[in-house]
Image 1 (tube, rainbow, N blue to C red):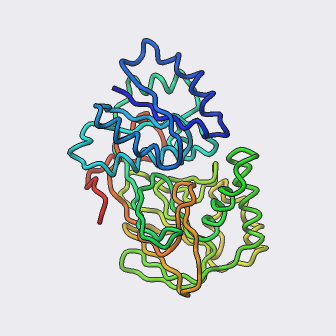
Image 2: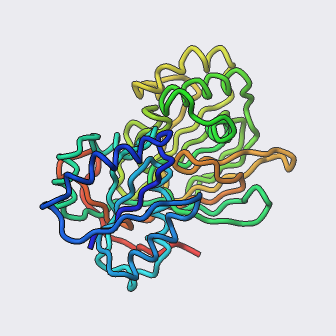
Length: 325
């Protein structure tokens, strides 16, 4: 059985319209399925648990990256023995849809209906993060795209207040430029596996896939099946330099800018070097919390319905599917 989890608010309500056009394409292609609508943030994870306990083997997130994040997080929180055979799929109907962009999933109804009907699950990596909530309490979550903090955290918290009146890509663009004009380096301590760094950073991205913010190729070489996280950091550049080089992020050519560094790690830990510094955290484009935070890659943790020749996925890798505690 296939369970569709629809976020009707995604894409400024466009996800609901997308679903009304898409559902007739399922007739004759799929067996039994059911549709559940999310009511609030966090509800999708509850719906995933209900779907898996009801025998669903494919759980389809209908919305944007935030909806997919909740669906994937909900599935990975279920003990592996209780979710055996269950896989996630994505119907890109939100405003950003960076997961779909990375894996080459078009907003093409007939094509996606055929993929859901005949596609086989492939295992990709997932990220896991333990961080501090805005209430000061420890929290944890999985992510499938990119976790980022500093400037990228400021942007999503701003967008949560203001919404996305220009759609995903242009709203992210406007919010990013506004944040760049106000940005200052934050004093951070960062551990990349056994290596520790300390200094001023405008932003750090911990990436499983390549894009964020509706098409910003922050980690252009990211491979969601290599068992590692790509870590891209922006050091203490001047605002004029940041603004001048900002367009390069859409082409993925910013890695050649002095002060922008890229590496890989299995585990990343980050904390403010100054106790009064508040550094906001963005998980898959959602305002989540703040540092300190610990990030780990979970190799091959997430079964996803994907086309065979899409994205930079490499070879599926095995490994633990349990969240570290």
